[in-house]
Image (cartoon, rainbow, N blue to C red):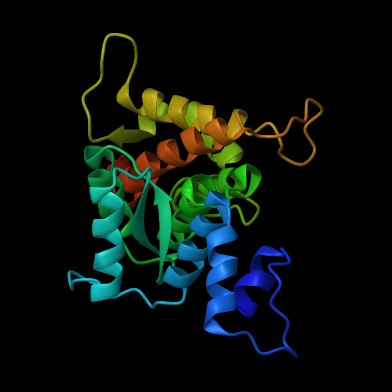
Length: 237
């Protein structure tokens, strides 16, 4: 409880130099707000190392999941960066797609998990979520699109693609409104240009939580496509 109190930076009445009886501790528990109770559950889950692969989560984690599900809670449990955490409930179809992306090993997936925690976790940070979402895409796009540019960014990758659309192919078919590669570039551009709190922007604005969550969902799709090699350079003939 001392560690939890320190992590949330709220004085709950626990002192390191003072013994607390079980009954006194229960009094503190009963007085916790809904927010602090949610943080406490998330804190305790974060102390449990996530099981990798298809193995079932520890029984106590499954018990928490069942309680949340049966009570119709807006929270569920997900493994993020090697630990279990509380995240907002999303439609199962969305989670299934995202889980397949997050299950891929590598720095990009790790960065995307961090973005998800900042966007959908119990203690959100929109700016951190958006930054990590962009980085998760850049980790895959820069080596692919701008391999010789050591200072490449998603913005530079977009420019490279814009000027050489004919040199790239995407897994989906073209449409009357333009090539499928052009549509991918448009999605990258939406992610890049909507980051209003990026350093150096003259029109700086704080990123809202809704904007950050939208960015993370968009980045999840782009990371999935790039990780699976669905955007590729056309071989020279």
